[in-house]
Amino acid sequence: MISPSLLAARDRGKPMAHSVDSYLDELPVVYEKLSFPLHQGSQVEKLITVSRNTRP
Image 1 (cartoon, rainbow, N blue to C red):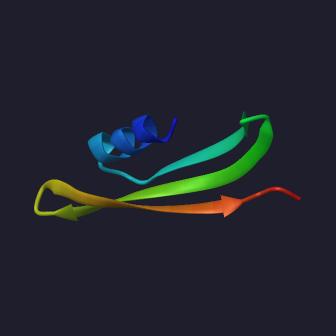
Image 2 (cartoon, rainbow, N blue to C red; image 1 turned 135 degrees about the horizontal axis):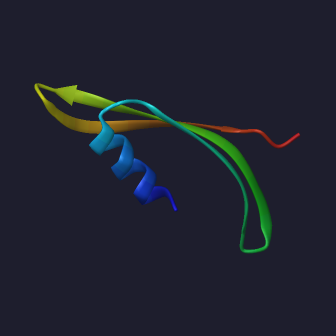
């Protein structure tokens, strides 16, 4: 679930936001994620991902 979104952020070359509300091993998972591609020249060198738990 995470790898495709990181690849999309890398390929797009722009920050991307995701809101996840799902289940993992029958436990509720709720969070927001921002992925920021870091550029070196014209290449994306790495991605920084910041997640925030949004469970009440």
